[in-house]
Each structure stands twice: as structure tokens, then as C-alpha cells.
Image (cartoon, rainbow, N blue to C red; front, side, top):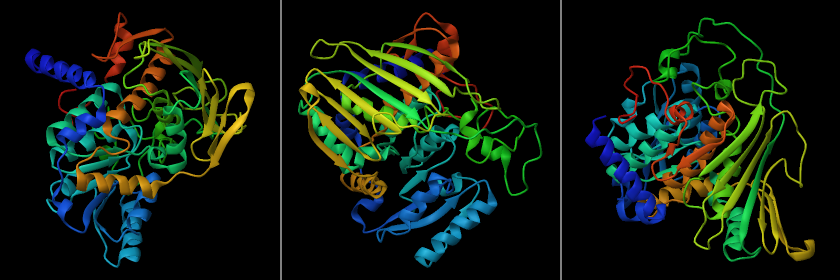
Length: 440
């Protein structure tokens, strides 16, 4: 990138953050797609396995959605997905291994991206540049720099980008967040997130030949090409630095996103401290199985600093405060404890239970919010700038754990200060590949 381009990019970052609201920014810039005036949306699903299969199943049930493409580099999985759509809709979508074929089709209005983490940002940027609106799974990016590039791609193309943190569209969680906003527990000075569940040991394996149905080179995409290992796929790619963000970026980011929402912060933390490592598993996983991360935010408009604590034990399937994975918000006049997939309890002074509610996550509501915003041009509930703040917590937490030092972070310029080793991890290394985002 040239000095002038870098200067312009940094200027745009500062200007956007200074707006103080992702909603204001996207409402001013978003425009509707061709589908806005039509009754139906034509969509492509990129990565129809895992969470992608949940999207596919729901999308196939919507009367106003036509599924034109399913894209997967695993030919068997693509075929299964296409058959499922045909059974539900009566018409089979096209199956492709190269996502660019779907992006190049001008009849496609929107794409759903449920690939491994390392493809989230490259695919989103390519789709936005092709004029598509995007629903992308969490964490929205593999690293902090990619998240910023996703925001820039959405803005320059005036596209709606929704991140798959569906708690943002879940009525139970929305009610709890409104209570916090209305001052139900006073000023919120700190919050806690916990991620405690039992993951499996993935073992230790040597490189081997990929199965014939898998195009492993395309699966790797712009990430550094490394030999295939049978314990990397499917799903366990998230435990490897090149492809995933650990469980902090897997389940943890859901609750971190709720924490950001409840705290009301609209920027990054300034100080990050962490300890952790592999205390339990003796396998090929690279990310911590045990991790404690502390984030501090600069003084808010009321002149108070705020603190966020993240705890992770992915070998401990025990509930704390009633929820396996959860959030606690500590206010000057009360406490709200919740599991975003289960419900919440609100306590006032002297530990008096004031209110409670139960209810599970609402994926269809998150889909509907995405489609409604394409039509209206309004900001979706989990707009990309919001998703970037939450994903960046996972990246900063993992970086601090990895280097074993307290980090000082410049929120406006998105730089780790006075630590070149840590700051290098704000970005990643790419190989020469068509999917490498411009500006990295």
C-alpha cells in the first residue's frame, strides 16, 4: 500500500470511529439492492456445512428467498446441500466450488458466508465489491486488520453486512439489554463473560493426503499453505492459528458481543492483560483451553472507566451462576446475569430478584432483520462495525495470551503500542492468492 493510500485509510478509520455510532454511518451510506423493490431475494450460501446447514435449512423455508447457489470445496457436502434445497424448494441450486461464480452472477442479491474463519473477511470483501449484501458468520474476521477492511468494503459499496451473532435479534436478550440501557442496575462499571464447556481432544496426527472430494488448496485460500491433517477438518480447523480464532472466537465471541452491547461501549479497549494456555489437552490444538483476559475501556461520557473479564475453561462442563456460557453485568444498583441462549435474571439491591425471562436464540429473526434492512437501507442489528468490535476482543485477548504481556491499544488507529511482536499479530501473513484482501 502506498503512503498516501495508507494515510487515507487511517484517516477514514479515525473519521468513522469518531462518528460514535455504526448505525449512523451505515444508515447514511447503505443503499438497497435490486431485490429491494421485488418480492423475492436470490441468495447464495457459501459453506453449507456446520452452521451453514442451519442457515440453509431456514432459508429454504422462507417464501421470499430463492437459493440459487450452494458453494463448497467439498463436493460431497455441496451435493448434500443442493439435494436438501431441492427437497424443500422443488428446484435444485447450482453447486460450485469457486465462490466467485456466485459473486459474478448479477441476479444474486445476497450471500450467506459460513466458511471457516480465515475465509470470512476475504469472501465478504469480494462479495461486497461484486455488489452483494452479506450475512457473515462470527467472528467476522480472522484478525483486526481484516475487520477494518470489511467495514471499508461495506461502506464503499454501500452494502448491508450482518454478522451472525443472532443474540442481537433475540427478543429475550433485547429485553435485557433495554433494561440495562434504561438504568435498571445503575451505572455498569464491569461485566464478566464465561465460556465453560467440554470440548474433545483432537489427538496428534501427521500430514496425510486430503480426501478426493476435498479441494484442500481452495479450502486453504489466501492463508499460508500447510499440509493437510485429518484432525483439522471438519470443524477442528478453529483450533489452528492459520484458520481459526480458538474457542474465544467460536462460542466466546457470542457472549463477548452481548458484553459489548450491555456495557454500551462503542470503541475498543485501551488495556488488555491475559494469562492462559493448554492446561488440559495434550493434542494438536494451538489455542488455549484455559484463559483469563481482562479488558479496560477508557472513561466513558460519564467519566467512568469500564472493565470486562473473559474466563474460558473448555474442559469444564459445569454451570456457574446457572449458565454454562454466560454474562454478568455489575452495576452500582444491581446485577444482571444471563445465558444468551437460555434467559436472564435481574437482581436489585440486597440481592432482590426483580425480574427474569427465559427464551432461546432466534436465528430466523436475525435473517429477517438482514433482509428487512436490505429493503430499507437501515442498519442491521449486528452491523459489521459492531461485529468488528466484538471480534477484535477475541483477537486482542488471544494476542495478549500468546505473547504473555499487557497490551496498550490505540482504539482509533487500531495499533498495539510499543510492542512490535504483538502488533504484528494485528494482521496475518497471506500467500499469493486471488482471495487475499486488498489493503492488507
